[in-house]
Image (cartoon, rainbow, N blue to C red; front, top):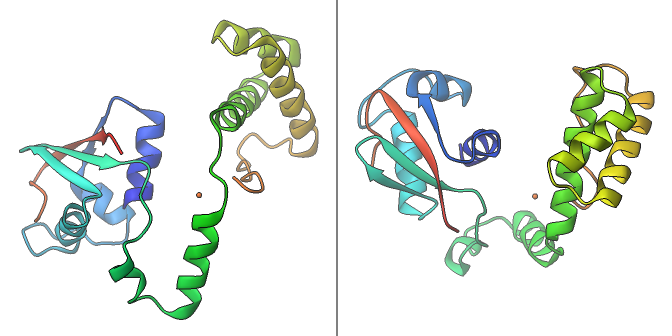
Length: 178
């Protein structure tokens, strides 16, 4: 659920109105509503673990960046998951420049898939206030990537090294500071 909301908030950083039944179905939690429905219990657990917070009767603030697990929760994990968690916790966090590069590449690739040429994508990235050298790099990467993967609907592969119930009706998912 948190990954789903983070993806929605990536596209709409100021928040987004969601239909509860559609979201529950998309997550495989069924359509039941009410206090004891699977979706309501999932939201409740996110609130209990301080990964989400009800701001008012129709706004759910969710964290986009999660803290490491507490020791008491780690102790309950199977050995293999504890080892994986330690490995991921020690991995270096993506820098602001790397995040910007990844975003610039995604934007440039989208522009090329929509019919823009590499130079046009570079100019557009600069209009969006990307540094000129980063805009050039991202546009060139997108041109190379499109030559390898020409289908516009093909998913963009991840770069290596890149990680109480709810009220009925519609809920506005907002970003909480992490």
